[in-house]
Image (tube, rainbow, N blue to C red; front, side, top):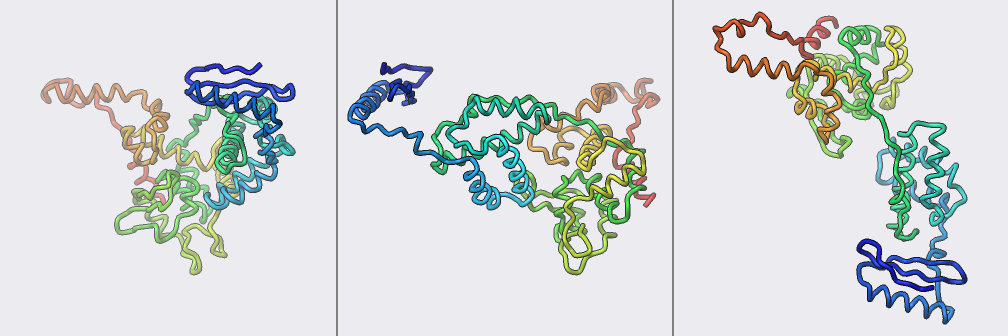
Amino acid sequence: MATVFKRKHNYFINYSVNGERKREKIGPDRKLAERVLNKRLTEIVENRYFDKKKEYQVLFDDFANEFLQTHSLVNKRPRVAKRDAGLIKQLSAHFSGKYLCDITPQSIEQYKTFRIEKVKPATVNRELACLRVMINKAIAWDKAEDKNPFKKVKLFKENNIRERFLEKEEITKLLESCAPHLKPIVITALFTGMRHSEVFNLKWQDIDIHRDIINIPQTKSGKKQEIPMSGIVKKALIGVPKHPGSAYVFCNTDGRPYTNVRKSFDAALKKCGIINFTFHDLRRTFGSQLVMAGVNIKTVQELLRHKDIKTTMRYAHLTPDHKMRAMETLNSQLVPSSSPEASGEESIEIDSFSNSLKQLELKQ
């Protein structure tokens, strides 16, 4: 039975072809929906009906290769493109041999059920995010119907807040345990909050010794940014021997930049007895120490270069006494200096992160 019905603000049409039920979304115009339905019925009677879905017989495997070659390798950095290749390899284990038009909300839910038994929710979400981008590109390139199945799929909730950071004593131990080539790398990451890729892509031309600034030409947000350079970072960078044939600060003997220092970093951690710690946790340590030293969240956001203050607010719990300090500040402003309350006997002493920098600098 052919019908026109409305759902929310749009009209749909229902009809059957060879016993198979068809449904199409037309839009907010009922008269247009009725005309399209009459046209479909006429096409069926005159044997001119063409199932548009059959036009999009594109295999997942073929499109995956095209997506990597045409999109990822062209528009993304090599490291990100390599990550896409890994995600697609995992997706292929489930969707290989299927057509893009056969990837439905149900098949995606089946994939979620299959993968969540083996990996963490965050990993599944990254894989599904890649699949969603692929399908959107297929639609944009006219290789799939304009109907993304992800509109009816929810991703897993993630608990990706990691609170591991180094205490000041651990910072000293780690630096003392680092191999000569590793120490300036760790110092740079630890005392600037630079990301992994930013540290290893650092070039000599990006360092402004006179202004004490490190220039990041391409950040995560895609914008050029400047990072203040403290004395210990400046001293560490000046001490790095320059390779005559390389523009990179941290590079191998052949001049190629390091991609990671996992082996030597893990060795340093083992030597000083630090466990459950990653290279990215150096950035978390930078932010955590700033907050615990009393630096306001807005400034910490600027130093970490977080686009959204909500990301920086993850560190807010590290200052349980920040409200008390605010009250003490207000008290010192309102109470006359001659009063007992303002005598300074109960003042809060804050050992700032900058002081710890100076202490570490003296030990070098």
